[in-house]
Image 1 (cartoon, rainbow, N blue to C red):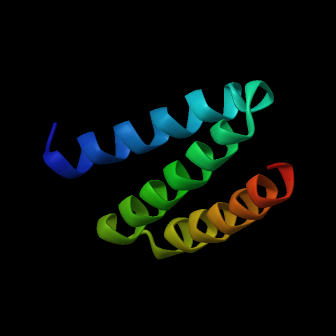
Image 2: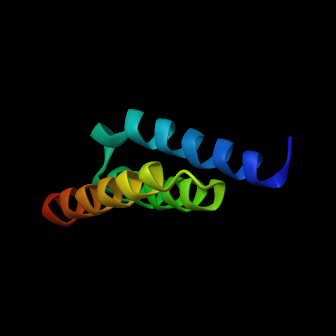
Length: 70
């Protein structure tokens, strides 16, 4: 496993865990948003720009949800 693949695995795992814990605290929504940014970076670094773009938008949606919840 190369470094880029490991980075993607960490990003997607963080997204999964934070999404599962969102109901516990608004801070998990923020962690989810940051995880989406990591996933976006992974998508762009890998060359899958549509994935990177969608993840960046999803990060913005989650950040807005966090802002409203807090």
